[in-house]
Length: 520
Length: 102
Ligand SMILES: [Zn+2]
Ligand SMILES: [Zn+2]
Ligand SMILES: [Zn+2]
Ligand SMILES: [Zn+2]
Ligand SMILES: [Zn+2]
Ligand SMILES: [Zn+2]
Image 1 (tube, chains in turn red, purple):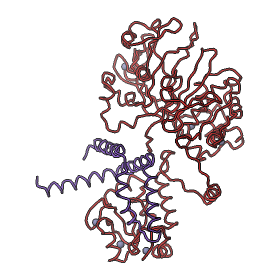
Image 2: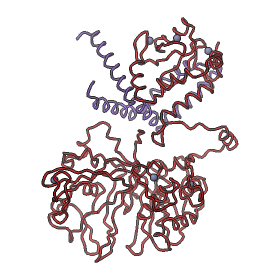
Image 3: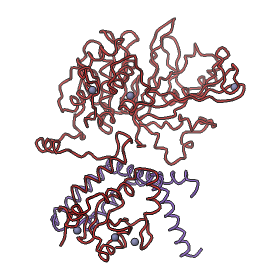
Image 4: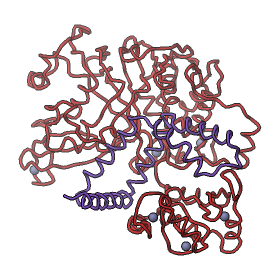
């Protein structure tokens, strides 16, 4: 009897659509299932309770014919349907329609359409990796039917792995491209074809469109190396300082590439116009932008002036060399007692870790007597201390280890080993953590008793390495393709690697992604 | 405290917590986290395959959503990884700890 799970619409829904339409359904949906406002949520919290047994659980349903909420578990909504002949009710957890008379949930295309529309409306403005399932259009359904082959990244697949031909010292570009191609959130964005080009007159010049094409190339399943001449050409036209066949700095290229991508997302061809990344929600800023808090404390009145600036990456000092550092610094940093030290060019550097670098980065720094700042509290020029912390963590965190030293006297590369973890927790470097407590006297384990500590956890997915000297060298990288499958990319050559290979390498740029992406 | 009294207190507490979760939108957030976690760990694919088997076995015209739910619930519950349960529990605890007026 009646409609079955896979069947089409029941006669009661057909009658409803013909007589009253789906307006009531939509109103209930937008108020009690996919709330559009805090007001609607409050109302939902107060009124969602079974009118018969007062339960708030047990799958509450709402009658479409009268003001009645009833639970499914104790049969109250079913009994209501029978006794009042009010056939249809709406499931308040998922928004689906139950026909009490036919005795099953109804599968109806018009109803489903309303559900998807309301769900989408409620999640609009939330994160791009949001919550709305993809609904293929009839055109897309057609394409899917005619192209039944699906590609999936499985344990031994090579999808997403593609070498890049070196076009003459372009390894700096190749390894950044590899890192971007394996950034999960960018991949999701580009492979779902979300870039809507705003570069009306010059789509040919849009670097974002070129990224889209590159993702297609990388995930096409084709295994021969790709020749990135179009990309190189675009980089040369849009970031002139990188043009020419000389070796460039991979970090500089990374930042320049993000900048051009961010500008092209906005359809901006006017280079003088600088957008504030703070207020930008282009895919680049959604993924890479974090907020760095700077607290300047006046030594006279102890007043604190706080500013927050956006960042795309964090450049980290590897620690001052023994020869240069003043003794005060050495003592406070515990350098003399630290373990192994490496000798490079006759100058001693202590081997260090990413965590140490981050501690140094977020440590209060005395600005010195020669750098007096006008205090906004006591309005006089005073000595002060400055401390940097992370106010907003980016979805993808890029750490740049400052291996290249440029000073008036010398230029050199620091080859010190810097250890870095596969999983990183940034909680200790967050702004709210640092206020008023000396975090580093407590071990990280004791420090984060808060249960939601995984919110600030990151996984490593790409590492860019540089070998050789500051003047002649070569860039390679490691990328994570699938779960813990690592590969080493050296231009057009890709080889399998182990996690140990990765963490023992001389890292230059380290890319981590958030393990848990919140939607706002 | 008498048993019945405790039961009433428990029910009241549960209702208050539920109300807070709904009001703040946390319930939707938790649902979303859970959904993502279950997809990531393969739970959804496994269960979907199981559903398909059940439907094939019984025939599409001879099964209601209710019957399907009853059939897959035990397996569905058993397949949820402990780590997912733990994480969700931690998130709920964390949320409650932040609520001053409960
Ligand atoms: Zn009830
Ligand atoms: Zn009714
Ligand atoms: Zn019906
Ligand atoms: Zn474009
Ligand atoms: Zn932007
Ligand atoms: Zn002052």
